[in-house]
Length: 337
Ligand SMILES: C[S@@+](CC[C@H](N)C(=O)[O-])C[C@H]1O[C@@H](n2cnc3c(N)ncnc32)[C@H](O)[C@@H]1O
Image (cartoon, rainbow, N blue to C red; front, side):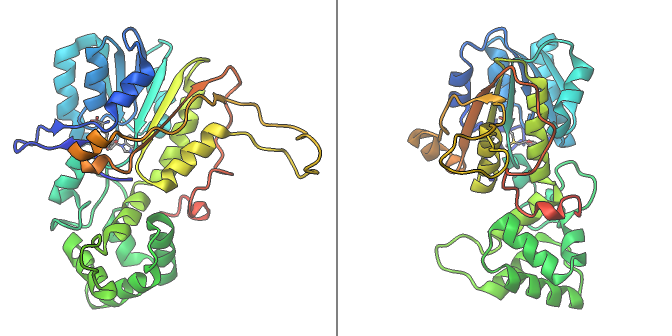
């Protein structure tokens, strides 16, 4: 889950580069006349491109900081554009408040935006001194709460599962020792504790990269949001509707892939017999995962780990939300953060 979509200009208004926009537009061709939910508005890169091509867009974002971009689009595109603050896990309910139109498409561009990363005061970056915050919605539990209160084992499990950090135990121990001296309150304070605990390889990623990713995922409940958002889109979209999801690391991509494939055998049986029962397909398996072009990666290295998956809704009734079989890390701790 990387930061990605925007280059921010000095005035903070964002000369942004939405990731895999060309591929998104190609999947939706022709865009004109479509009713689209942009569940991760950010600086509005996707929304703007879709509006320009004649779509109607309902955009959502949980970060109150994006309102200035939404106001701009509202002025430019009027009735064709609606912005609703909120989380995409509730996208069907939020859309129902704003429209009785049938929605044709849901687009999700998961993760943190470059604007969030670049603003030191948001506490997402281990490169910039700021409070250890990381809350996209600016409310609820923050990263400092986790780092200063979790017991060692739970902290280590979280860093391992959400950050895929091999040094998780060592890092958790160093955090517990450091906070016994004084509370850990800033980004650089935490980054320094991690660097001293693990050392730093020349030319490698900063040793705090994975721990910061893990904390961000935990603070924002990102896996829970992703799973709930996918099922909300399944409820919302009619037969033939499309769901497009851009993710930034393998943990998220695995969830999306398994969600779309959905087919599960019910119960164990002989491999010599045909499956007794396959779960009905809610999504037509239309496409392989798409990756950004070499040219995009060259122009915007932050796009390099992006993966776009999309599929078309069948006429089968939507499933109830279930985490089972999706490979969500630490789902046993769900709701504990
Ligand atoms: C990578 S940016 C999207 C950029 C956008 N596609 C563009 O072109 O400008 C991701 C955005 O999704 C928002 N976001 C992340 N998780 C969310 C959630 N669960 N519900 C609503 N918005 C979310 C973040 O606040 C951030 O602004």
